[in-house]
Each structure stands twice: as C-alpha cells, then as structure tokens.
Length: 291
Image 1: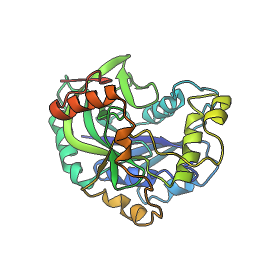
Image 2: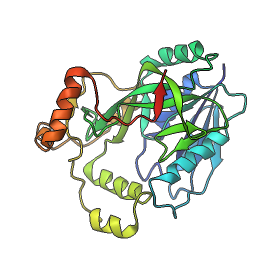
Image 3: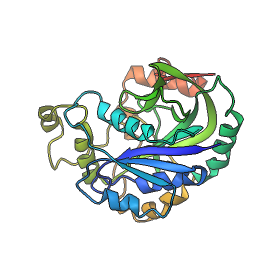
Image 4: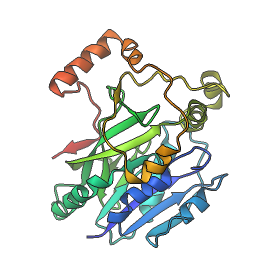
C-alpha cells in the first residue's frame, strides 16, 4: 500500500502558516509527499527545503491572481499537486497549510486505509474537525463551521479539487466515503489580531475584487473576533509538531467567549439547540456520500 501526501502553499512565512507542522504531522505514514510551492515573495521555499526528508517532492507553480471568484485558485493549486503524485499511489492524503493531524490518530488512519484498500465502494475517508479560534485554547463549534471533510482519497486521475479546495469530486460526482474516528486540527483562525487581519485580507483577494477588500477590510484595522458564534474550551492536547509553535505564541484571546452566544440570532440558536440535543444539523452541506 503506497500513501502519498499532497498540499499547496504560497507565502507561508508572510502569512504565518504552520505548513511545516502540517507536513510533519502526516509524513510518518506517507511514502512520499508532494508540495506545490507557489510564486512566493518570502522564504517559503527555504522553509520546505529545510524539512529533513527524502520523501518530499517539490513542484513550482504560478498562481492565477486574476480569478476572483469563489477561491477557485486554491482548487487549481491543489490539482497541480495532485497531478504530480506518483501513479502507483493507492491513497492520496491531502492536508492544507493550516491543518495538522494529532499523532494519536495515525494508527487508526493507517488501519482504515488498509481495511478499505480493496473496497471498490469506498473512494475516500472522512475526517472530523476541530476549528481552533483566536487562541489554541478555544474551539469554534457552531453551524458556521463544517464538522467533516474528506482528506484521504483513492488515487484516481478523474478526481479533482472542488470549488475552493475544501473537498473533492470524481467526474463532478460526490465521492463515496467512510467516516473514520480521527480529527483534523484546523488552525487557520489562530493568530494575533494584527496578523490575522493581514492574512484575511490576502485570503480574500481570491474571493473578492480590490474595491470590496478596501471597503470591508481596510489596512491596519485590527481583526474583530465575531464570526465564531460559540467557543468551547479545549481540554485535549495538541499535535506534538505544534508544541513549540504554541509555546512561542505571545498573545491571549482578549474577548469574553460567552459573549459570542449573545450575538447568535433566534433562528441560529434554535437550530444549534436541536443539533446539541439530537446531533442533527439541519440543512448541513455535505460534499460527499457516506457509505
């Protein structure tokens, strides 16, 4: 069984992406790892080259900044990395530059890949998600945050990244997947307020025109935490490769987490209550079919 990890990145240093931690977190169960490095204006290339592993395969790409619709550039870059995967690969393990897998889940992930290797009705494996928000101590948990996503798929040239690279489809059809007992840790919203504001501005360049960004995300405006809906204290442990990064973080979340609940409208509060009681998220978007 051959497993290939893949991802894409650009300006990881400037935007403070934990891409090295992301790669290292799944590298032990990968036979190779393809990383598409975009035309960065910082030391992203050197950052990746410093990873001491012969498994790493770097490809160089140019991002199309003319596309300002739905983050499709991210899907294009994902597809470039996917296309460079060795053709004898069985499973392709996708991880984004702000995600990380806890080492405790690696045995379960590898076990699931072995169990479903020859199952023709299984095209991918579905992860649960923890979305850290504001700091490493809180998880955002509400209808605004997706609960699951496909991160491992049977390698097939007909598979392509979908929309803004959140998931995948084969011949534009949803993948048939098995849910596994493993979490993906998402750190995209964990930064000091000033750094997070710069990152959000850069990120939105692939969704909106410059005029919209200048009107809604002015320069030097400190990020206002307000789109979480609900924060829950994290009681677990973080992946080992995130430990030094967490130890060197130099800010605290200067907001009262209980205030987020008060900002939720009556409809969202009611829907959230139903989900909390019965585990049913009404109207949940699912870009996959659980089998």
